[in-house]
Structures are given as C-alpha cells and as structure tokens.
Length: 367
Image (tube, rainbow, N blue to C red; front, side):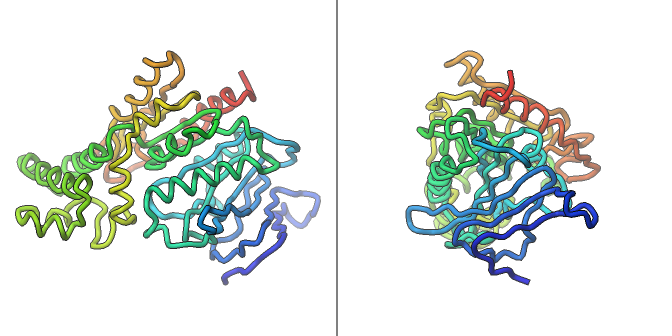
C-alpha cells in the first residue's frame, strides 16, 4: 500500500515487546509526502530522517540522512553521489550493504538523495534526467545538506559509487569538502570509458569469438564516436553510416530509447566533461578504490586520479585495490567468473573498514 505521510512520523524497530529496547528511529520531516512503496528505512544503531531538498527549479527531492543513535550536536558527514542505474538510494530491508555498514561504522552522518522522479522525489523520472541536471541537483543538495543541524558543514566528504565516481569531483568543486572518495569509476574520457566497457564485453561475455573481436570492436568504437562525440541518436548514426546498422543493438546496456537506463543526453553531456581537470581542481584528500576483477572500468582510469593528484600534491591521494573484487566489490575466483557473476562471495569489510578509517582520519575523528 502506498503511503501518503506528511509532518513527523516515528517508526520504531523493537526488540521483542519491550518498549525500552529501542533499536532504530526513523522520522519524516518537511512537506514532501512519502509515496514510495518501499518500507521506511530502519537500521540498527542509526537514527534516520527523511527530509526534503528543494532544487533551483522548485522540485522537492527526498533526502535520507542518518547518524549514530544517541548522537548530539553536529558531526562530520558523508554525501553520496549515486551509480548510473535508476535504483532507489533507500537501504534494502533486512540486508547489509556497503553503504549501510559504512553509515554505522564510520560514526558519521550519511546523506543520500533520491534523484528526480525516484521514490518520493518530484520531477521527471531518472530515465529522463540528464547528466548536467543530475550534477546540479547534487550540488544544490550538498549546499542545503550542510545546513542540517546534524551536520558539521566544514567536515563533509563526498563519496561516489560506480558512475557516481564521475559526478563526485564535479559536485565537490568549489564546495569546500573535507575529502572525496570514489570506487568503480576513473578519470579517463567518457568515450574511453564506454569503449572499455565494450572491450571487456566482447572479451569476457562469450558473445564474440576471439578471432572476431578485432573487427567487432572497431565497429563499436566507430559507432560510439558518432554517438557520444557527434551527439547523434543511434538511429541517426545508423542512417548516416549504413555500415554501422545493427551495432547499437549489440552494445551492452542499450535499448531503443536509452543507454544503461539513462537518456542519450545524459551520455552526451558526460562525454563533454573533463574529469581529470575536475579532480585536479580539488583542494582535499582523495581516496580511490578499485576491484581487481572490475567488469566495466579500467584500472588505468582509477590509477590516473591517484597518480596525477600525487604528482601535483604528494600524498594527497590514497589507493586501495581489493584483490579478486568486481565492480560491486564481491569476490570471484577469476575475471571471467566475475563477468558472469558466478561463484561470488560478499566481503564488505574489505571496503568498509579501510574506507571508514580513511574518512574518520580526513574529517578529524581519528588519527
């Protein structure tokens, strides 16, 4: 049943029937109704607040802010920029995730924003949201989130996951952040990133015979050049270049109207961005996390961030490579098993423990 809730709501998770055994508290504040079918988020050891962020065009976006249970006064915070797919940012019921564990173990506030048209948030659906608007919404949300009474505005770090790793430095620019940490996304051009996606796909998926990879990848590179740099729709590319007809249907993550669930404009705008310049403009510590069996992004793109920043400011960037880990940081016996998502195992602490330690250090909670 869909909820239509306004004002203040308390949702309490109880241990047995004892009202003194309080595990978690969730409250809804502001004037944005709760309309999502998802259960209100509750996490042991965390207070959770559903709030509202208002964009410059007047859209109300759902914010979800957590802090350690019993905390008082402003705390350092983690501001999350999300992956490309249009999932909700709400923690799933009954299951730990890396972000949920990080919210608990870091001792910090965590700020998440439901994108336009997702969950309770107003506006066009995420599948119609372009890249520049998404970045602007995040930047506006970060400014407003710093005013939250739970947040110490001078000690906010930005955390980008997957293709949120491309938005993270853009969101952090000129926003006085304490640090930026990313995982699953590097600083090569967006065209190079998409070519690498396809290179791994034709090599590891089994969809293309090894002896056919050479002509196949050249076709895909040519198509991506016209699509991303020429900013042409797939139909326009096929019409202008008949030799490339049918290539779009073979590229990973495509359908007639979007690419990885996002509109073509999202990808065109991403392809215009100078990600390395954005990273070099930051005056804050950086951490980059890479999984050895990454199914999409290149190790080179990740290392580029660390190596380039450290040439400019020695020691400013830290590297963490998790052996046998994939894009989602599950562990696999080899790269091909990872690509097929076969025989994987979770090992959240390989990420959560060192990232929590780094975050606590850069915001001054520990040495």
